Image 1: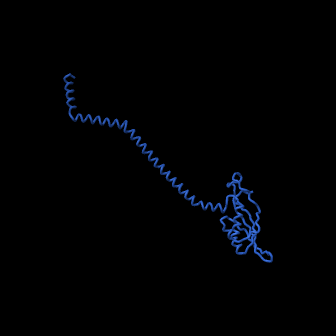
Image 2: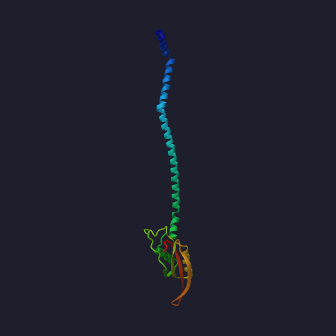
Image 3: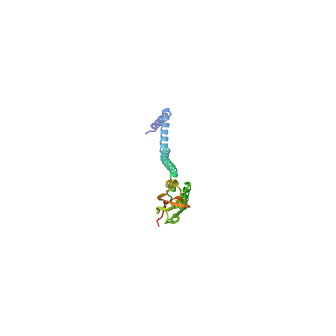
Length: 208
């Protein structure tokens, strides 16, 4: 190509780029190139990070919902446990997990006093072994329902004796009345009504 031809092409290009449409096309080209560059090297990592953050937020929301359900379940269980606490205490009083002979006999004496009954004799055919929580042979896993036999000799009128027996049966401490045998005794020429009562007081203990 001759020098004259090259000069003509260069002159034509200069004139073309001096026109506004050429400048706009060049700026548009540069803008598109910048967008592509940002999309490839800047925006894409940002979008990936945002996507990861959105996923973590959704996972944390799911964990939060599960924790809320567990807290609600624990709260409901605690409320139910509190409502049953009184019944549990009553059950422990009715059938204790270890024998307490002194307390049981004091309760019988109190019931007798409230019903104007005189206890003239009280006997135990056996005495339960002392409960020791530190003794591996005496724990609740090996304990079974047992009973403490008690024989009472009492004195009073028929109504009082009957009320005494009914009070024993309705006591919060479980007491089983096995038998009641009445008899008349003379004292200084006067007859008095007496009764021999056999009781079983249940408890949990280890068999001998």
